[in-house]
Length: 113
Image (cartoon, rainbow, N blue to C red):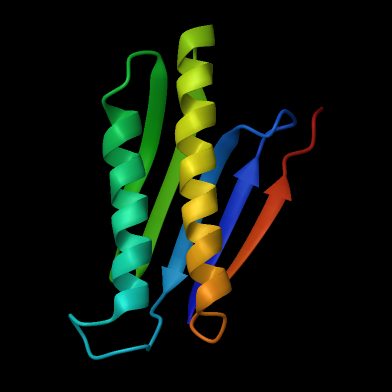
């Protein structure tokens, strides 16, 4: 099973996305759930990494692991991150909703200090 954990800041902006596990919905190299989650995560990483004013840490880890941590440093970057983060979260939520036996997702809000 794939477990997705998304952490949003106090304004709903993507701060972190952690993905672990394997869906088990198909054979290695042919698992539609793993493919969907991987494409969304890698596309978000590539899109955000290329944007000025956004700091991105993480990426693919070991087999079945992915993490993404973000920080926007300007207003324009914040707007871009809001849109890209919303797209990622909605896409992952859609996959988890369609394949609940193979993928779970939790969304947490970061506490302000």
